[in-house]
Length: 113
Length: 112
Image (cartoon, rainbow over all chains, first blue to last red; front, top):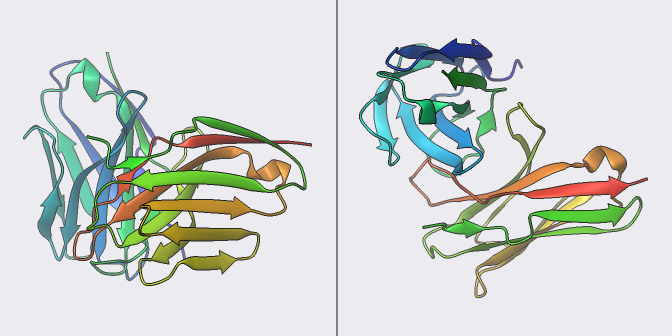
């Protein structure tokens, strides 16, 4: 089976712009979660989508949003980018909700100038 | 508030010896624990997991031990190999919640 794929792998934006990142889960996986990794805060949970609905949300401002499509693919959007949004954004998928192992994609490295 | 802690930022071990990576957690609702291995600029790779109903799980060279009363888990790698050099993260979650709480990671270096 193909793993989790994320596009683009690298992105450079300027402050105030918005960005959309894409994630395709492992085939058959229905839950998609997003995480942010920064040197200062480590790996932090952003949100989880299951059956096209956001099921859980981490402690991030409303500028961070996402959605999931009927084929389980997911996108996340960050509006009005700030310098502090520079990070590695990771997507993870699991077969279902609950105590299923989450499998991660390679991430999208976002740099905000 | 760091609910999952890895107090050792780094660990060096000789090839062939045992590597022991430790992790502590504070939230008693956590009932599923995982270890991931990560290289720079890549996503975490799943290694091994354990449910709170068990106290040990083995997969090849990797064994995870869980001590619920101490809220402590450890990952043993035997024998350690140079290819094991990476950053290791422990993570925890609670039933019904699909968000993982990660530790800050331990950088393992296996010396040939």
